[in-house]
Image (tube, rainbow over all chains, first blue to last red; front, side, top):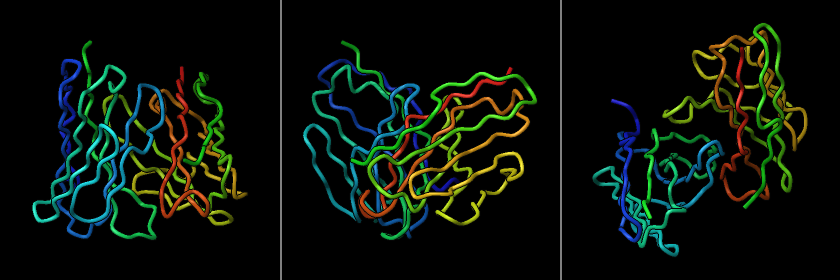
Length: 112
Length: 117
């Protein structure tokens, strides 16, 4: 079993839809959870950064972490064509550590 | 967020030549830099971790003699692909972290697409 599982998609939704992206993980030591957005032929950019279980909201984006289920989610409300990208989840165990474990990424297309 | 640049953004070379890719942190001191490789429709694969002034730590299966990494200053790391072959064609991405960039966050460069003919 891989440490982080993420459905690669592709996922196609109409503009304005609510998008749900998910990752599961097996390492209970992971404490810090991140979502990155990567446009085609570009490097990933950090979208959300959360610690332990709970929710975090930033504009149209909401990140949820359920450590008991080892499951994290990213919700995008009122999705826009500009949200079309690959979304990667990433996680790490220690606050002082830079080492990240990435999911495969989910390719999202928002259709106008 | 902190800014990381990469140069060149794209390079095409002949088989057998060496290619150097630069990664720079523009507005913070990068004590740690990472080099990743990404194949189409695949996730980021960590190749190596480098700390300024130290030898890089390579991930299992990555040939250190083929992928030379130098992190000589707090703002610059280089990856040299020696004697490149077509199977080395990939998207190479660096990331950097350090004081001033936020607590233990990695900031990614825009990537370099290498094509070996």
